[in-house]
Image 1 (cartoon, rainbow, N blue to C red):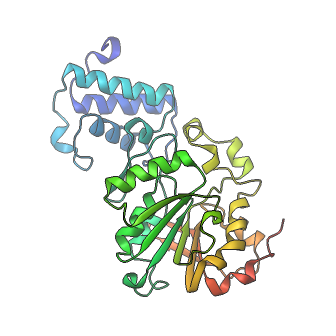
Image 2: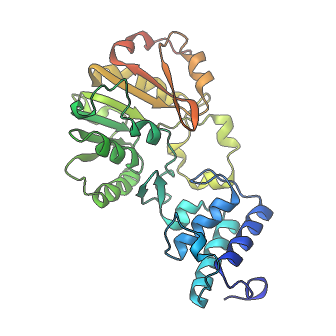
Length: 305
């Protein structure tokens, strides 16, 4: 029930101020779609009130009904008390203009691949229309596979994940975008279920959190499945396997791109002879590396174990 310190919160502006104050007081962590208390509060308030996510000013002085105020209070308290990421509270995540269903069966999408796919991986992919097959490895919610389907109009997209629960979410998102005939979620431990498949492009946002970083994760990140985060002492357990196996699943001239977050130095140390090209996006540098099929054999066996 609305009571005490919240009974005087009547307008959208009131609730935004109160939410930011509570978030700051609680020392919340961000990174699941926003980077600060204000953006997080705006997202939760607008979504709860079923208002457009990109329009705030017209609603700031709008008065809320009692039921709207109660719904807001419940969500904001869950965000503070349980440290539940806003994306899970709202069951939505955004990559650019694309909205995806998410819940604790999958990590919250936050990949740099979304920016890279806007340009279709030019110049490494010379003609987006010529891409006939592509793979999103470790697909999670299926978000990147869906972005690939929109960018590569003639491609069949396989979307692989080891988690059956994650693939349930991916299938829902694929269906929501009407792509069931082009995007195919597949349960597999990396390439195990697609032994004969060959692709023009493979992208992967694998687990890459180091053991030390896993031990220090804020509470918000502990709501995400550890299977989708943890990757051994140096965060490269999955990357090693992908580099060892990917050449067999790429067509001649095919491209492999792997996202490793802040682990560029770890990759360079583990694979000193790897001729990787590190890609920059408008918002980040050196989070994704790229190799052609022909460059992959040189990486085999070079990892320092």
